[in-house]
Each structure stands twice: as structure tokens, then as C-alpha cells.
Image (cartoon, rainbow, N blue to C red; front, side):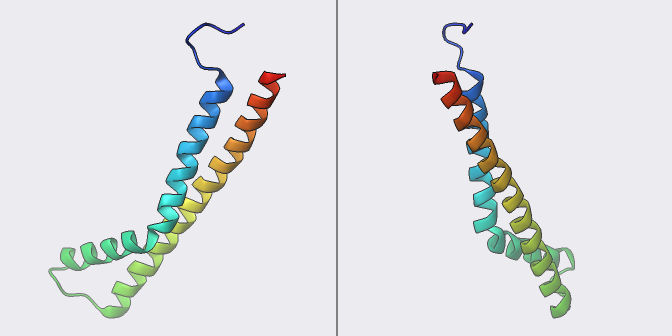
Amino acid sequence: MEIKGKPPFSAIVALVSLTVFVTGLILVFNSAGMAQTAGNNAVRANFGSMDTAQFLLIIENSARAYAVGGAVLALLGGLGLLVGAVMVFWDKR
């Protein structure tokens, strides 16, 4: 039984999954820029001076963290989109 004006659960699942998927892709594609910002903030926190190796380590680890986090979100969002699509298909039958 569906209440008028209320979206079906499958549509909500698909919308939330799409949002998570897009957020993950944004994180993956912007990970290098966000890592550069993290490195610059670390230099500022050290009063404008930092060892180059330490600076590069911060950038590399930050980029990897953002990329992995974004990939996980994109994967979960993609799987949620598939589940939402199947739910919509079964609702239509």
C-alpha cells in the first residue's frame, strides 16, 4: 500500500545511492588538489618552513586517503544504484 505524495522506498534508495556515488567520484577526481591544499596547510602550520620529504609524504598520503575514500563511496553508491534499480523494476511488476 502506497501513500499518495510519498515517494516509494526504492526511489529514496536510488537517490541516496546516486548522491553517495557522485560524492565518491568528486573525491576521487579532486584528491590531488585536496592533497595539495593539505600540504600547503601543513607548511603554514609550520610557519612557512618544512622539509621537502615531509611535505611530499603529506601530499602523497593525503591524495591516497582521499582517492581510496572516494573509491569506496563510489563503489557503495554504485552498488546501491543497482539495488535501487532492481527494487524499482520489481515495484513496477
